[in-house]
Amino acid sequence: MKTIILTLLAAPALLMAQARPTITFSVSATGADKTELRRVLEAVQELEGGKNDKTAADFEVIQRIDLRNFLVYKKVWKERRAPVIGDSLSRIGGGGGVAGGGTYRVAEVDRSKVFWLITSRDHDNVADGEFLVGIIAIETGKTRETEEATGYPSTVRELKEKTDEAIALTPSQEEFVAALKSGKTWTLNNFTKTQCSRCNGKGNLGVLHENLRCPSCQGVGSLFSDCLVKW
Ligand SMILES: [Zn+2]
View 1 (tube, helix red, strand yellow):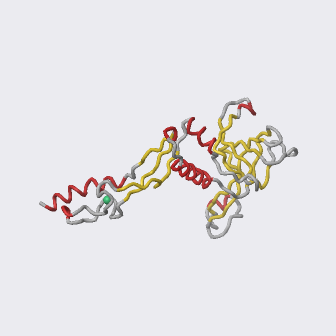
View 2 (cartoon, protein in one colour):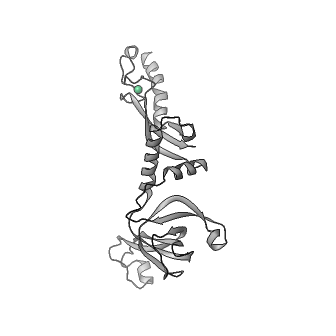
View 3 (cartoon, protein in one colour):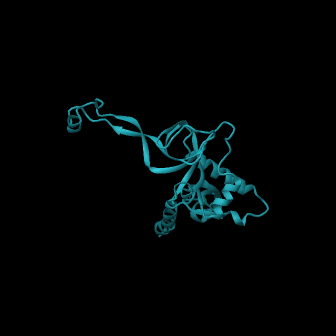
């Protein structure tokens, strides 16, 4: 009998352990205490910053809008598998492959994504189809309408050249609020620590259950939830 009860108790816990709970942080409902809001904004900035590649890249200019604004493609590094010597591909191609069939990296223009690049200095000598070379550009989190430049409506992501004096964290508080108001949300993994409701933070199930280690929190007494940040 005891075994059956314990099995019944353990089953929902196993199900719960699979899906990490998500709590919602609603920015519009923040009261006078802005401590948690600051913590959320810092985590969002860290999340957004982590997505940014901070190495210099080359950009092919699709269209120059003015001296500092360009529609561009980004040149990216791609991993390629070298043909094995003697295989059909290298015979057709007349050889020239790398021996051994390993991988190598090539820089290629990724024409599947268009960006709106804002440079930190004037470029009056770069024509359409040419390259802006060695630019460290980070995503601002904003989008632009290409209709301004091309007459054709399309929404593209904005990139801004990073300069030493402009290491401002993005999104700024204003950008963060504006993005939330327009419906954007962020999910921060393992952001919120809450007391385990099954064992009330004790880590065990109490004397009625022979002080068994709490299966919900693995005896820790607290659980981490993902945090959905929304307006
Ligand atoms: Zn617990």
